[in-house]
Length: 336
Image (cartoon, rainbow, N blue to C red; front, side, top):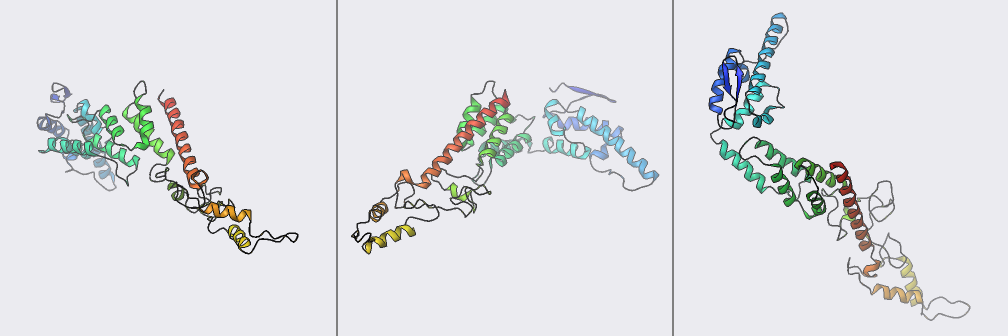
């Protein structure tokens, strides 16, 4: 790599690498000076501003010399350093980008610190997966073309081992792909999965049913808002009466149940001259229902098999599983 050169008006000049910046800077200084462009790349000579024939000529001359400087710097870099400047079209910015990377006494230490930060990176609780991946990409870009360069395999391994268990199925699918997907393809699939399943702080732990009331807000389950609440457009209801099967109040607050209890306490209803004697079957069943306790939500009045919270959590888990399977199928088609 150190033997590569590029041709200039002053002969062949060694291409810029990680190890020869001081020598390269001295050589390219002479090349740019003969083209009257060195003061442009260092920011000493600025683009003339104004109107008029003279100023227009000066501006044209400045742009011509700036373009020549861009070409000389670009041709003077080795392949490993080109990603640093490929997207830069300003000579001053290009010169400073190379200076920041290579003309620093603490350059090696700085790169080592970046690599350590990358290795220690973990997604924080308040950080979305998209932001986390973007941060890792920024670390990797800083080390392009250096001895500390983060390889494709290292990038994939770090992402796979630091994401939460919510991505376990998706990661297993990616690991089994033949041929193996690139790091960029893996990141695209993971970000799409996070987007589709709204895992970025929307669902939470579906096994407890808590997310069923945080995602829906004040929208009804069947309303146009699309929320997952209990009522139909009347807000998110957390309880369902086990006596009358309505989901806008609890069993304890049920008016029909209280009326049945009152009928029982007052001796029931006289039909055809025969008093029921307070042995109302509905009242007895209600009392027995109230003695039951759900082992899922902890509320009294029903068993776990009748619990509305348990059923909603179960349905939500099934939806998530179907979404993961659908994403895996779509990912297979994208990578084939």
